[in-house]
Length: 255
Ligand code: ADP
Image (cartoon, rainbow, N blue to C red; front, side):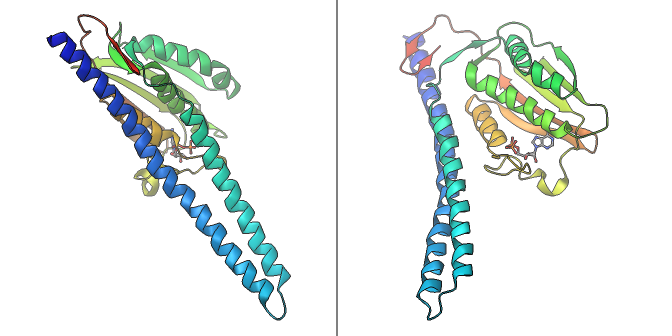
């Protein structure tokens, strides 16, 4: 009976975690999409006024149409990103050997790491199956941190080094990703985890925000722990959960 109750509680937790991530995302997307829409409505109003004037000002109308096009493209971009996220499988939680997962991600990123002439050092000491996690989400988090690290080292003359480590401390697994990029300047340090905050020309600014929500939904944390002109270090932690006596499968959650 206790095991049944435990299974039920875990399934509930997994569902709640998934909802938290989706809920937070939905809220920020609604906010973000509202901006281009209001922009479109006010530009249309302005265009109509310019056209209705005794001497219609075509130049102003042209500028307003340009604004409308930009706002429309921005909204479409956000919808595209949302569609990609919505395709995610329901959260299936399994026991994950974190070091193997990191190795898999590093293998995926190997081509990119080579192409950008970055030297990789991996010190993986977290050992056997340790954490309960949604494998895809966890892979995405590691992948995202690595891609951000590579981006930070683009166009830099200093030695480009990527150091990925994992370890066990108390009842947590700790994973860190360090780069020798430009670091994160103090004025934006408090904003990098905000949805849609980006300093990249083609960035979406959703990566760190999604990664942090995903880690918190797993009962862990994601932080930037050091940053200087010499680079940045991101670190996430996940609680080690003792393996359950048996497994159970409930809608959307497998333990
Ligand atoms: P995006 O990569 O689309 O910009 P993220 O949410 O992943 O979105 O990152 C937000 C911002 O945080 C980046 O635009 C960048 O300014 C900063 N950032 C993230 N990782 C690093 C890093 N390793 N070094 C320096 N800046 C970083």
